[in-house]
Length: 206
Image (cartoon, rainbow, N blue to C red; front, side, top):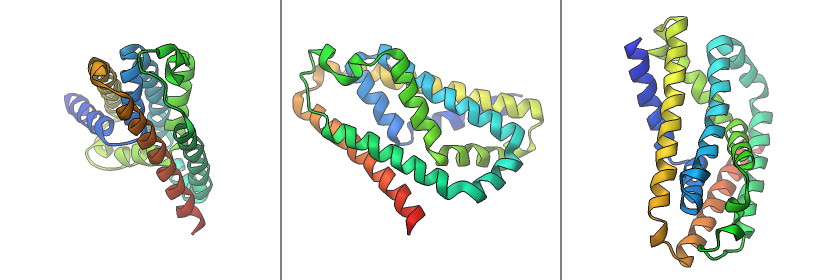
């Protein structure tokens, strides 16, 4: 059991700090609203991860076959979603940091933030592939059914705690920000979303 917990928390931490779209989304939300804005995003992420864990534990064999058959369609759909989100960031005009009521993220409710993070997580087929891979390789493949659940839940808990910490830490440096930084942050997030989306689409079509 302790091995499953230790491996789960280590795996979850690595997944959280790896550069990705949710990582930068958490930073931006933390800069605008601190942990209040980051918490719904973290909850949205782990909601998707819990689904992936349940599927990986119960249906890993079936899902491997499903990915082999429909992976291109899933990948193409995810690419379109990322392109749309990226375009939104690139077209978004900067608004003064002190007027949070005018910020897009500040205007979003906790439900909307949760839903956006959930859809980003679910739409990325790499996440499902990653979770299935984790349960198909040592040491997780040698865990009993109960320890596989312990491993999965521990990893999700680690992801949640790390992402909450990221949003909290981002909120602490809010006073150091300026208009130039925020413009670059929005542009960077837009290019990141667009780049991943274009790559996913090209990977399917070429």
